[in-house]
Image (cartoon, rainbow over all chains, first blue to last red):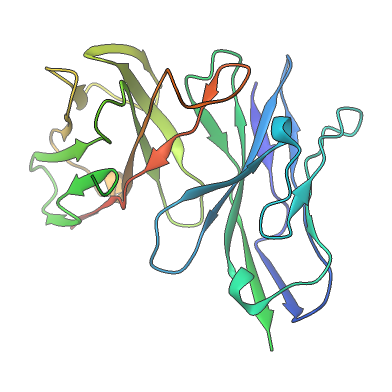
Length: 109
Length: 120
């Protein structure tokens, strides 16, 4: 079964503090993992995907197949990072996304 | 083209009524997806189309749900005999299958703003 687990509903940090949003998955194959973000009053949008190994807005995520994790990290949080973050997994044929329940990141000044 | 659009943005209906939602994808995106998002949950896949062909349906999609994409452009999602448990945000997304390659065959899904359904 395909499943994505985000254990934290809310993560509250101060500006400048490091951030790590946790994501664990279960999938019987080679997964494709993504992070989506939804800012207040905006639509869901792709933040980054593991295969590109990019850093977007200072965020990075490394796929750890041994721990089946894909945690999202940023060394210094900014207030504009406050948003809802969803970890998602794509099936082999890329026909659909399986989302976690999301983590709300709140960055305080 | 300003992205995926959905209509209506909000719908309040009484239990037992039928409702229909519309999704207009980004022009020339031949894949179109429907997801449902309930409070406190992430989006859950319902179904997707490749052009006008409906290729996969989730078991979440009961017999009361039907989706169409008759000309391979816009899509409609109809819920018959609505129940209170149908109250949710219904999201539509579209993606290309050429020219939008992110790596190994995945094409980014662009989401619409959603239609919020409230069944009273």
